[in-house]
Length: 345
Image (spheres, rainbow, N blue to C red):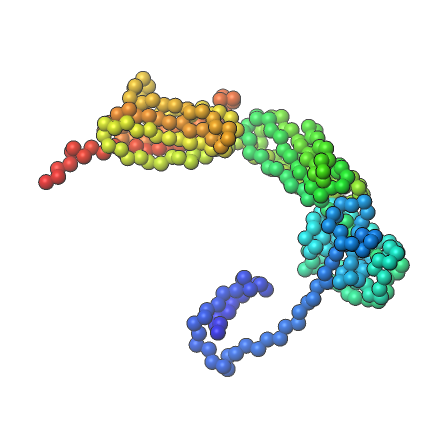
């Protein structure tokens, strides 16, 4: 039995309940549901085969439970919503209405679909037995567009990219910033069914959002697919300290503190402070840039830990290429223990 069932929405995942109860049968709940049976859509070619390549030479005939879809009320919203429920891409869709192909879709049932937005939950449909000849819906769903976002530091040239898959013909790709088209972009070549467009940003100064606009080469009048591509600009290369932790050692022993920086694209300057210049008991090192892990580990070796070594040290990270960039500090603590001072009696 369930008790105290409380739901914040119309999905079971939004509900809470308890299995410990004080229910009596006079509190039993009786329920009647009226389900909505949605049609199953598919696209077929001239031979009646289901289309899996949605960027073919012509739009596929749209069927709903084997019935054709008729033009009245159909819209871009309906086309996008149906592509969504078929698990295909809903941007850059192309559709038209026309006459049935010989031997395909010949029955006495049709479906009319009307959608408020591009989600099927906003759609209504009705069945009918008549469709004006030449008003059956043919549809192509959009290609898959995947942007690559970038993190760079101030003034560092970088390349943004936009990958388009599921193509049969080369697409037209442009880049915009706000409402303006920007230069420095390439459309890329169609290799297999994939095309990669790039945008080179020479000297980024601030966080910027660009838009990759993809227009079908097969259906240039269709609505373009658009993806935002984010460029995040930092005063130093984006990095984080992954091995900064306090360390405890015995007096008069040698130890090393580590300052590991990850997420960088080139060698950085790592400087240590917290000791007197020229003190040969301390050996600082910036380490070397590891291009495989995009990281660099600076170390501070303390040859002989003394009571005066018990303190906080700082590793300061900055750019070697841009002396004007900001610096970032990370603190690490060294605790030195001298057990000879303990009275064990």
